[in-house]
Length: 113
Image 1 (cartoon, rainbow, N blue to C red):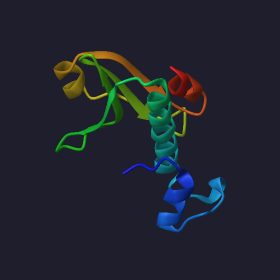
Image 2 (cartoon, one colour):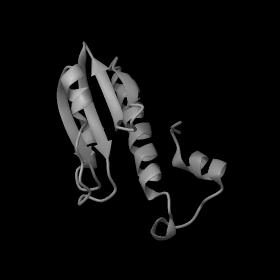
Image 3 (cartoon, rainbow, N blue to C red):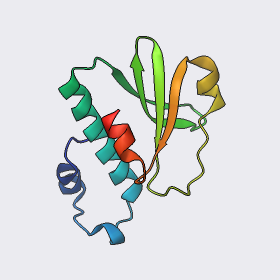
């Protein structure tokens, strides 16, 4: 479940700690990106469908957009040093136009594209 406002998310879980002391920085970062991306899509009136993908073996993709049968797959990582591999299971089965690992260094590319 994602929230359009991380303040609401923080209220629900009862955590208003400063960023440096948070243990949920990954989910917080992911929630921020999904919320802001969905706002942008709605504002631009882009009719893309959004998905989350996970297999029974726990392979996953954080965020997918599908437009005209083409998928764009995104992984969200707070650390730009994190190693990321998009699951071959997904890449072989679906028509993937783009894959992107979104970090604090390139998030503007994700939010504005």
